[in-house]
Each structure stands twice: as structure tokens, then as C-alpha cells.
Length: 134
Length: 258
Image 1 (cartoon, chains in turn brown, orange):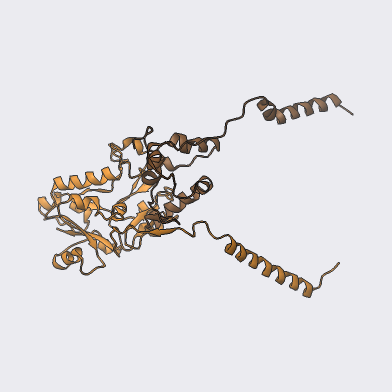
Image 2 (tube, chains in turn orange, green; image 1 turned 90 degrees about the vertical axis):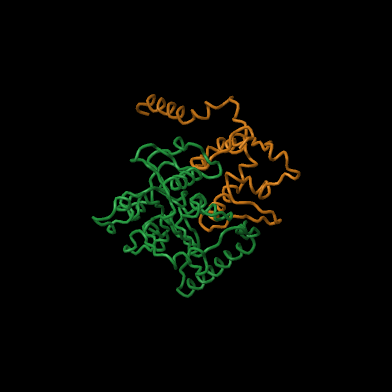
């Protein structure tokens, strides 16, 4: 093989660069999974802790629900959401969702930071003040 | 292995049937997740076909005007940048010649010439801003309100060029730090969107009249122009009123008694 040492050296450097991110992370503690908290005063007061829809649905589909709420409220002028079991909610992020979930940092941001998603809700909507008082 | 035209058509037909059947089967077996939910209007909501307003300049003094403007801008988190270049306004004062260009005359009394008129979005029946919006961020609701959906606005400012009344303002800067006291119930806007008066759609939805009408002590009359029995129609039937630039054909819904 002509210039064998150059080829082998090049290969070693290449493999070093490619595997660097994996090697760099070996032995380091992984980022703990997010634990969103729902221990706000408003939720503690509730006898039956129920969100607009079941927890499992909200966990995976809350963004779909919020998108739909937005279009229904702003574009279609329908302001009240009626759940399958007959509860009524005023469609509003700041006045319905965040009245209960007043702990944005521990509820919204916890998962959004972990998943590296940056929803732009709070560019316009006013987030509740931390510490329970809205 | 070769395939005859006849064979090919048979296979194509059969797969088309299977494919279409499959799609509808999925629809039947996995219906939309929001199927069970229903939507309602608030029973207290004010319902109309074409909301409009009469502004009685004989009853409106400057102090009341200021109250109307302040109430609107406070409720809707309208920022005050403190310079006319960046100004954002939903309802504001205008001189006669600016509010009604072409109707002024050289012998007009000073009083009328310098009288401030209260102007706002005219909620046109034929709104040019809606026609030019490329994203349908601004649209006409079934009750006649020309609405803004801030989520869709891309800040192209076509609507500002189209509006003959200057009713629209652009957010050149982040408005958040310039909102004096935030109304937590209503969102602010963000940098790069256009905003304007929305005739308090959020108040109508809970049965309240627009904020400026409430503050005006009867000088602003709000009602449904499509309802012949409404108060506003009675006023329009009895009094002579003018509209801003009605010759342009946008059919404004805001009338003025001079």
C-alpha cells in the first residue's frame, strides 16, 4: 500500500471525530427526565383533579387541543368548550389553562426545555406570576 | 414475465378499490379525537349580523374622548412608545380635514376645523385589508367585525397600505416593555405584527359592549346595523350622519353625527 501510514492516520483521525460525541458522553450522568409539577394552590383546591381532557390525552395532544382552541376562539368565535362528560370551559390560554397551571416554569418549561421545543405562546400571552398569585 | 394491457388494468383497478376502501376504513375505525367534544357560544354573548357604531360629536367632549381612548388602550395592552414614528393606536383623535378629507371648505369655522374627531377602525363591510391579506390573518367575521388573528400575521403590511383610514399600526419594536399596566386577561402583541381595533370581540363574547362605548356616556351608540329595530338604526333613521371616505366603496360601519 502506497502511503499506508497517511491513510491509516487519516482513518484514525476520522473515526476519532465521528465518534467524539459518543465518547464524550460516556460516564456522564444522563439528563434526568422532566417531572412536571401540578401542585399549584388552584389544583390542590380541586376535589377531583381533572383537566379539560384526560391526562394521557393532554400529555401527548395538548398542542393539538391548544391549536384547535385558538382557531375556534379567534376565527370561529366559539368561546366555550364542552367536554365529552359535560363540563364547560371558557376557551382561553391565559384565563383557563394558566389559572390552574400557574406554575409555568415547573409545568410548561420543564418538558419543553427537555424536548428542546420553543413554543412562542408567551411572546404575546402574559404568563402568570410565579408563586400562585395571577 | 410480460403483462398484457388487460392484466395491468385489472391490477390497477383492484388496487385503487383496496386503497380507497382502506382510507375510509381508517376513518370509521379511528374517528377524529375531538369528535365527542362540542363547542358553544357563551349564552350571554351579544349576537349581531353587522355590528356598527354611531359617534355623536355633539355629545362627545375632549375629556370623554380621552377616557374612551385610555380605556381601550388599557384593556388591550396597547403600548405607548412615546414617539409618533412607532405609534400604535386602536382609537385616536383626528382633525376634521384628516378624518373627512374633501369635505372641508376654506370658510369653515375654526371651531369645526380644529375640533378633534374620535376615529377608529371602521369595520368596513367591504374591507380592503381583508382582500389583500396573503395569510387570512385579517378576516371578516359573520357579525361584520374585521378581525385580526395575530397567530397568522406575518407582518407584510399589505393591509396597512390597503386601509384608507390609517387604522392599522405596525409593531416595529417589542411592545411588551412599553405597556404601562398589563391587563393579564388579554394578550399583548409581538414585534412584527400589525394590530388594530377589533370592536372588542372578546367583550361581545361575554355580553359586554365595547369599552369605548361604555366610557362614552351615551355619545357612542353601538348596535346591529342589520336589525331594523335596534337603537342604532333608529338613530340613523332620524339623524343626518356622514361616514369617512364613503366614496371609496368600503362601506364603513362607523357613522358620525356632526
